[in-house]
Image 1 (cartoon, rainbow over the protein chains, first blue to last red):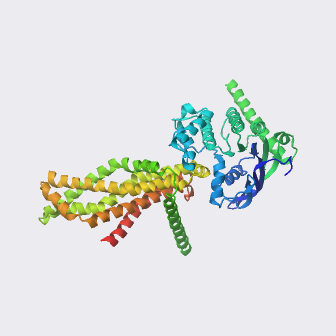
Image 2 (cartoon, chains in turn purple, cyan):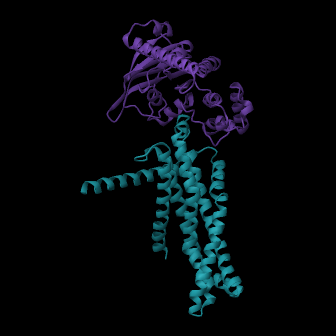
Image 3 (tube, rainbow over the protein chains, first blue to last red):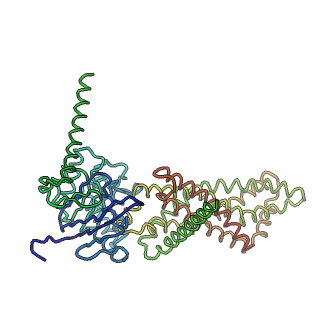
Length: 269
Length: 258
């Protein structure tokens, strides 16, 4: 391996997945260097979440291979699957917090169920994770009693409590306003550097992704159409990249126009 | 027509196989499950303590009605003294296990199906799997084990309260000597009856809780419905099928043990 070859934690090669006649992934490939924050961009419905769920073994791909830490990942091998799940965490778009458990119980759950730690050690590590995510004061609250941002942080606390090497983020900013989108990306970038895990994020928020990520990729029609540095993405003249960038910019312009229209309307009235 | 019958038959066979695999997986997950004791206690509380009022109320009224009806029927033949026999055998052999199971299906089973359905909808079950936690071991196994313990206890309680209800009707309201009632109860019940009662209770517990868990767990596969409607449809299906299976299993067990 040459010195300029990045140390890859994850390599996805030619993933295929279809639902009935609808092809979602059509040979998607991606390299994720160790310790980096990689964002996969793409329009809604292009298969970004399916790609992550294939990685997390929530969905089985029909073809393709995944290499984790240099070794092929065989999800049919129970011990290999358990090993991968121990080293990888998944943050769902909906957070998937257990609404009948308190914040502390939510964070403690993966430790209780997958490790042989004592109750005292589990409590200590769970409290530490809550402290690091600034949620210690809310440890006895249920997820429903927390704000959207706190729920996101709680989900992240649960994801990092097992000290994973890879964290998969499924649309972490979906449904959030621009300020909160910024805050969530800042949170991911901050904790990714603080804890040193490798982060793979899927989103359609271009601006935030370009600022926070080490590398970006563009998924379109089931394939990766671009992979590179954020600056390269911004400067790319590839039609598919330009289309995506322009459509994102056009959306921003439309939203601004709508806001201006609303402002004029309110002035008229 | 033939195609429709064939299709339905294939679906039924597939669903039965799927249910058998689901139950088998939940049972085998007990081996190696972590911190199972706490979850069994919590499930036992949900199925036991929370269902206690309904078991007590229904048990009491069943006994009262049996006492009243039984007294007037036996009175025609001058055999009021056998009221204890009638009430106790009816309760121990049939009504106790069946009605207690139906009450538990209505309360604990429906709650379980709805809870698991919502957990499936909100990706909590998928989250468990991605954490490397067996969702069967975490969500279903403790409920099954708790059911094996709680159903016989609830049935015994139902029968006891029912016997007291029969005594209240017969002795307090209709003037039958209390000692006559209780001595006929004592003479009527044999070890075989108690065995039959508990066999039924354990079987009903296993069948109904695994069926309710199965429907809730697979709410996302509900045909023709998604989201909240899928949860509601799977809960309804769980309660209806569990109620039917209690009566069908009761017939099968009775025909073998009688």
